[in-house]
Length: 130
Image (tube, rainbow, N blue to C red; front, top):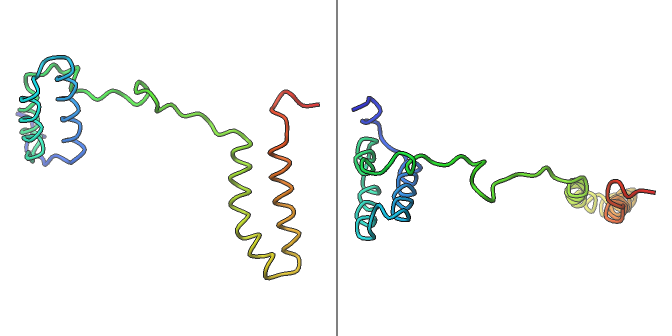
């Protein structure tokens, strides 16, 4: 047994083992009753050694967590310029409205923010300019 076996397992480690048990169930390596029994034992286990014992008969390929790049729905795209402009305008809008109520020149700031939102929202997409 490795030195890591006596360390306490975290909740994330337990969740990872439960996911491995679910994958083993999907592949037909466990029946439903065995899945329920092992999931209960996973939740009651405290150390890595106890978790390892529960997955000893499951192939290692099912135990390893897939990388986020492989998992669907987790791809990230950079935010477009319009999204960034809208976010900045919305962040500025609150203080600008506050300034409009407290100062005479605040109204100009509010008008500038709305003009910026309008220019951003009505601008043609990149490459379709005049």
